[in-house]
Length: 485
Image 1 (cartoon, helix red, strand yellow):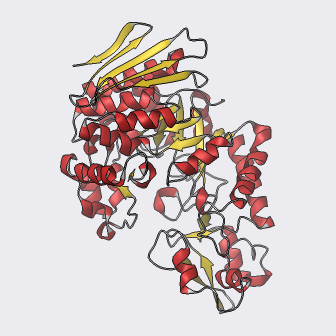
Image 2: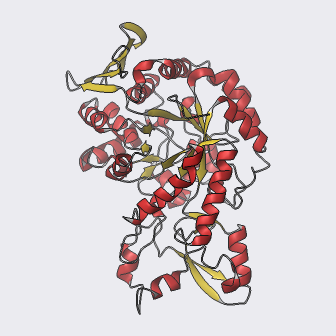
Image 3: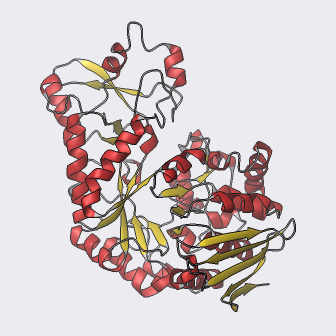
């Protein structure tokens, strides 16, 4: 079905029930009209990173179900699938064939061959300066050795985990792979394709290899042209300064609002509404808003919306106010070297405080765009220290596995019941039309009034809130929808 202006749930295939089929049943039985779309996190066979190291896009991992289960979900919700445009697993056909046949492989140009990449730049490259310039996710050159069956060795570009080998997106063989895979996704029900790690996909000598212009636009346009006949949309995933998503938005694409999470935390920690007001006035309508995702809470995304001092304040307050949030959970000790994210559920980041949490979601509902809510956030979940410690994986603090009985209990909690009510109302009320308008006022340092109107101006929703004492009132055409005193 086409994308609807209704809240999208983000979930793994085995986190709200044991598989896709049970997830679908749970959504219909317990979540109801609170969501209209589902971002089903990678459900393909994978060798790591919780699905983000796929090796075969043609099938559903048998542990999660099959294509019939995915398509059945697509009958009730618009769906988003992930396409890892930057990388693929070493278990993939492409990697295995290249390893076996080396230069004789039809995939000999599918990966970025480190030595050949730099040879083209001239002798004695890369220099240390070249390596230092690369926008990296690790503390060494982004390369990994491959030993071919003929006994020779080379290095391949490797930005992320050991299993995730980067694709040469400029090659003809990669372009053919993109086209086949993307079209197949749409045929199985994808209405929106999330381009994971999109900004890393273009590598170019003498650049920092992150969101390299103008080549990045050629890649985005290539994907758009593949999907255009199928009326499927693209959502590039980029965690960086808000100005980069703004460029993509200016080209007419959907973008993520990754600046809202930290801006909202700052607002609720400090009680000051000026920074939130500033961001809401700047935000595009054609976006998906977030407070939480399967990764950590982004810090760098809010830079220059918040000052450096305000970001430092919010980060430190998160560790003070947050329930069971510790700096070590976002460190190498817990397999996390991403200094730009903090690992915590959003509910626990707000100290497991129901009033603060529901107000944070009210802000999200009234922000420009379509809300995305992570499954743990939908159930106002606390940090899962047991899973964290058993796996020593920092991000697992925010990846609790819920069974059906747990969910039946969680939806009875007032904070969850009110959140579901809020989202269901927002999904149906015309004032949140993406062609409509937003007006933001800050009557005092701690208060904010957000007014949303549809394009005709006939439907008006107003949120009046005090960030210091966490009170709010929501009205729809003058009638009170929800209050928190």
